[in-house]
Length: 421
Image (cartoon, rainbow, N blue to C red; front, side, top):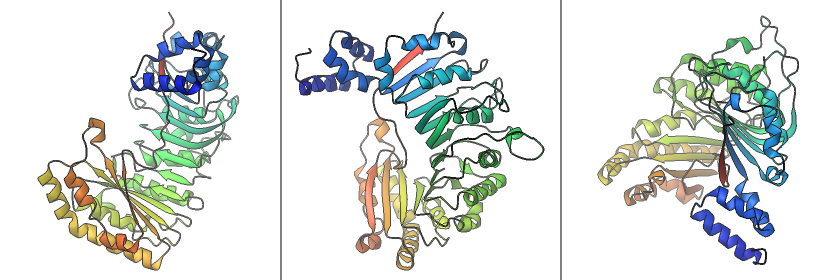
């Protein structure tokens, strides 16, 4: 195998990977071929996925996992950690520190239900990994359930404090009900010196009126240029959360360039009409249009566009196509026609009077997950939207399988379960 041309070895590996051969078998081949090791290991271990239980994993065992395998650790760019026993145990921060430090090329970290221990006010909390991260995603799916050993807020702040700098911070599926960490004179808690991300994604996290003050009190909002809140289907329907979003946009107004807002209940139409007014530098607005109600879907989009934003250059409209039969699709677009025309009127006026010079209309395919092609009816009606913008030459139509702002981690993943008896 060592005598094979590099191109041929790469082609063989690509075929095996496409056929989803067992990755452990592919890795084992590297033991008998140096060339195969050079070609495959960087791809096989680009993303490492580990599921663990705290009582089975200790500080003493952690270094042993990489002993004799330094070449593998170098190739890991993305690490996905999932804690199985989140109901009873907290993960020792020193174990996480050892794991992170053993991966010199680490750039992306995703933590699912990783309950990081150690008291928030402990003076020993400092940067323990002198490294930059491109992306840190923290998903606390079960933290709102009884039995979670540590509140979610200390978990996220303790995790963030591991790193010198972070480009993107993504918070998903958390219930942040711990008020003790909001910075006020009554708590007396010291502030941590945390890295301020340039990109912030707040998914299905709630309640916002508690989460956002915590982020601001720890100065995590001071450098935000990209704010994504539009991925979750949850509709903002609470007065306190609406007010929290208004405060959030005020906090980031001096730096924000890209904004994907959440969906609001219709009763907040007046609030939406002035929501973007504080944003002095906003260049791109990403709006999601769900194909559920042909009137509300498109009309809701117009509310946010009532604000005067002189710096706005691009409006991205992502149509989430999830329609039924051909007849249902046709009926949907017929009912939505007047609202679509009204939206085009607003965009034409913005292009004529302001800096808007680009409208992106994308079609996100919900059928791709089920491997069903787009119906011709959907494509036909999609192609007829905004004829005047097309004529002006500022409309760009694209088809996506995922939202454009979604940052995905590419590469093969190898799932390892550390269950040490």
